[in-house]
Length: 147
Length: 147
DNA sequence: TATTTTTGCATCGTGAACGATATAAACATG
DNA sequence: CATGTTTATATCGTTCACGATGCAAAAATA
Image 1 (cartoon, rainbow over the protein chains, first blue to last red):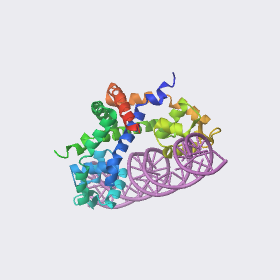
Image 2 (image 1 turned 45 degrees about the vertical axis):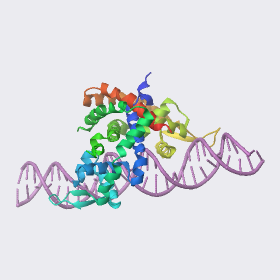
Image 3 (image 1 turned 45 degrees about the horizontal axis):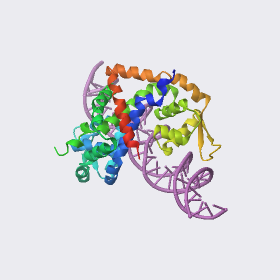
């Protein structure tokens, strides 16, 4: 079969692409009530761990470029989750800080991870198989992210 | 740690989302010369396996909705890879067929899967760990796609 | 110090994803 | 046959991703 490798069922990337889409989709029932999207949730995860970060630090943690993150932060600023202030020491930087609303959302989001685990567990039978994904994904990410 | 589960490093979905983005990105050096995007490549994979499909069949195979696939096919029609004809038996359908250009691209794409395996192998040391992803991803996709 | 390079952020354009909605054809049911 | 429902596709609006480009500040180098 000369074209065997071109079949969809032999494509790892298609599986990743689909699994990522569907998993992000599984967050919708939990994020919609909060009025945020999945990428916005990721930004909040970063800022809940450490507040007052410049744009580039957020981008690095999410492995995205600033041309993706800047508009994302602008939308989040418009919806009152954070503010962006000019840096004092380095005036090129924009320091991103949570507002009260952004900080308080952590309380409401607290149970999302376990809700998601539960709903996936319910649909899949076991979650153990998913744990095996973590080291392989980490290795793949590390390999593909080095420049 | 009340918020331990909200840390980025504990998020499976973030890993999937990042791994998918980076893997799709790894296709760029191979798809750019062909003038196609990754989702367009996926459509071609489907049509190379079976030509003359209605939009809904392509959407089903890619697990996407028609509101994503229709504009994708329109762009591909505009770039001369395929054409969309009204269905004979069911006039609601649009039957998608490859053009000569679309068919011939298979030859040029033939080596992409092995090129990608090779470049990932080079960056990661081994590809075996990636094989372990397949069954777990399939189970996850199956669980999340059932309605 | 003057000049070059790098860095941090922003803007623009294009192509996805996807929810919501529309429309016509096919199908089912009374 | 009439009417209601489902199906196949398309359109619109919003939000991401991301390549290309621009600009000003900071850092490095001459």
